[in-house]
Image (cartoon, rainbow, N blue to C red):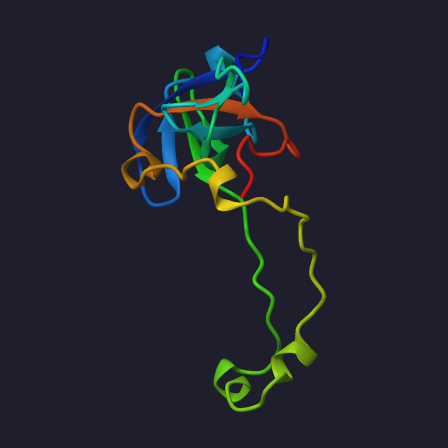
Length: 153
């Protein structure tokens, strides 16, 4: 995510609890209720030309996405909002351990996103554990609904 004109950007000002944080931008900076932000890793991933080694660009890596739930003049309170659905069925897990394939019969249909067929050597390194935690001072950048993450996964 490069600097895009009109995109609201700021920093994490405080961690409030496991799902909420405050950012240092608010109503006076153009933030609106429901606006979504990506909390970004401090160091973007450099994209290099495979032949020359020249740095072509850099891609921001997301830690988490949040949505503005409370708006004040100079700050916004944001909360995590994305939900991942784990397929399951009406039968309890203990019973399915004894009956092979029963869970598959009762599992509802679900979508699987197509991924690239790549080797481990071509994967960018994951964020280091210390960089993956959301911290005061992390960059935040506005994202639009349906905008894909800058890091797949």
